[in-house]
Length: 213
Image 1: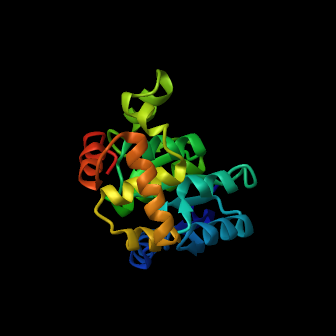
Image 2: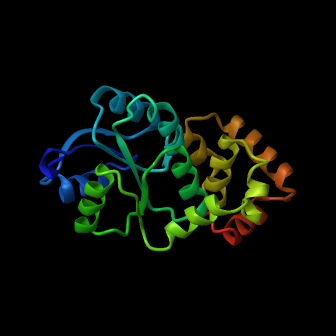
Image 3: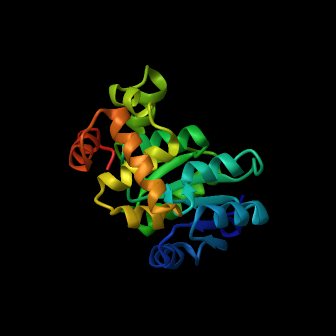
């Protein structure tokens, strides 16, 4: 497969990030679509069937994993590369379990990203330094100690937990995940109850200690 013919879809909720990625790789690959949220991403991926999708892991209307769950089996020739600011172990393992072939952080250079896209298209696996260890640990042995606690949460509760732990307000979480504020409050209450924590400050310390934020 020629590098010049690779067709790529960019999925990120920040227009400036998409513009930056497009400027770095658009001269090498054909950008056939962009999406700012999970439902839009699913629609564009299924319509264009690109060679590679650059996929953020936290999106309005869902997660990168939700996009993978909806698309991976329907477009078997498409390869997914997570491109995220997050280097949390749980995020890395989650998208790999969903079918992503790699995970790189936004600290990557343009040249490195071009190489990563090419390698992913050739069915190689690509990870930023130290992130590969998370995948090896997850698949080589039993779950990490923190996974047992995380498994108590539903996928939506885990999304809400991470945003709250990062300092988002309830209103900001509601906007990010396209939920009502009341629903966010309900999820936060469930998270605190399941993790046996008293407030969002304890939640932030809990998540930070496990490198989830």
